[in-house]
Amino acid sequence: MSPPPRPRVDGYSGLVTVRAGDEVLARFRIAVRGEAVRRTASDEEGSPYFVRETAEGPVYEVSPATKSYREGSPEALLAQLDDFPLGADFNHAAEANRRGIKAYHRESDAVFAGNACAIWRFEDVPGAIGTPTTTYWTTQALDGIVVRKVRRVPRPDGTDEKTYVELTYVRVGADPDLFRVPEGYRKEEAPPR
Image 1 (cartoon, rainbow, N blue to C red):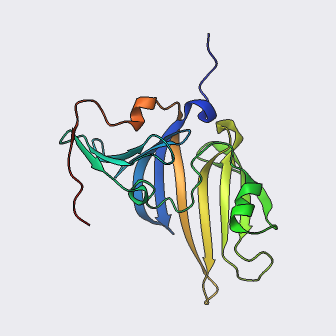
Image 2: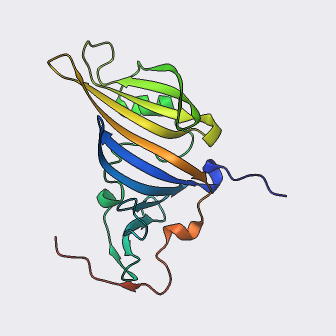
């Protein structure tokens, strides 16, 4: 009998929703396994998708409708994910280091999409009044993956502009074949830029 699948080893898949306030800007499916990433263009069944097997490997845009693929770009693969950590084991100290700050804190614990989460808050300028902040919601039940990112930017009128990247319907385990172009698909030339 083998152990149950874990995001750290076996990857995961889920639905990503990107919102500005209450307005949904994008909704798409994602799968992650180590450095491998797959992202659909939308949440519709049969939607074109992008795949990458390794962090430095090529990105392909795959069309199930035409059974074809072509070269894609890392920007298209990661569009609208703006620094959203995809891997397991979110490291708050590494995130602070990436941002070039030393002061940050664990804000609280809360539940999001059925997952108990630790919420880590990072201020753009630690200690400054009215500085934009980013919070990452991580869940240890899923090996520390980030399930929610909230970006808050104060406005001059005293209100906040909030944007969200939310990962829901998480399923543990992602088949390695998800990150490859299916056999039998024909290669097309990339459109001119």
